[in-house]
Image (cartoon, rainbow, N blue to C red; front, side, top):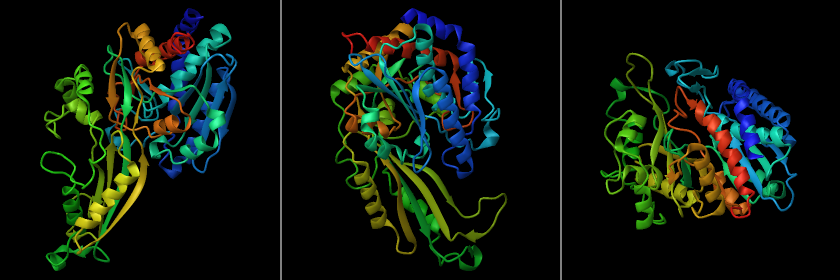
Length: 459
């Protein structure tokens, strides 16, 4: 059964690529209202493809926001494990468009990569699960495990309506484990498995002063410029070592054990790789931690956007009436994202100058998550990677956030396995891409994984 499914996947690579291209052409940008019809169209397209692949009970389920796509194949029997596959079909905005070498929603293949918004995050990685199941069903007429699919359209805007859906549909989504492909591996030749994700608290600051923009020559020196006040507030968030200065921020941070630091030290992530990925030479941050620890196992506080005053070409001598910033904090195990939002708000309120008005808003929050490395599903994932790549994976942490992972763990009581296949693919940036070989290997790895889960010694 395994060999026949792998053969079918190999023989249909061109078809599977053509379908991915069609999927990527749909500009399903969830954060922009003008793309709402495109998000709906992407959900309908995905549902139709899932049904054509042999997946049953496919539905496009409405939420108060963008729809959820569900489908399942549950004919493996009650003795077989049930796997819930999660992914998202919405994508980030493509801006700035002028930095793309080719149109973001006209997929282009060059040098073994497919370039398009959503290629790696997360259409390509989510879609390969559908193609893996299609290959097994086409080759054998059955699957070794029961499978459920849950694809959402709001991951890039905080998954606001997904948790209520999970809470209301526990029976529908009940599973023995969850698998997610929305992360990356260490390199093209070295697979890795993420066992921990950081949580997220996302805030927005609004600083206002005069009732309108003022002439800086007439009023300069008498008004506390809101843009300057905002810069002063932002500067208060870190000390000179890069540590976060918000009182109480580190109180619940779970320290890395020596054993875990030793394990992370075995992950081959030299500074040269960091420099290549970032396009920058000099690291910054807490010097007592390695770069890998800083980007995966330590909490952060980052300015994601800042605005205020004149932005056009040339000069305009104004004191802006308003300024603002978006600030996200990545959190580690045991940090409560709502508590961090409260600590952030209190800090800003405490240090905000009385010469301006400051408002603090919480945009989204999400818990971090950890899956034990010795879980049976993690062993199956490791064997699946090794069967496809020829080398065993290393275990590492991921600096990003997938808030729904903690919800799945808590509400479905199911371990979550993060089987990523991306690389440094410019996700959220211009020229996002996905290595075609990883797309094909991902399909094969998922086929291996489902077969391994069905073995009593593993499941």
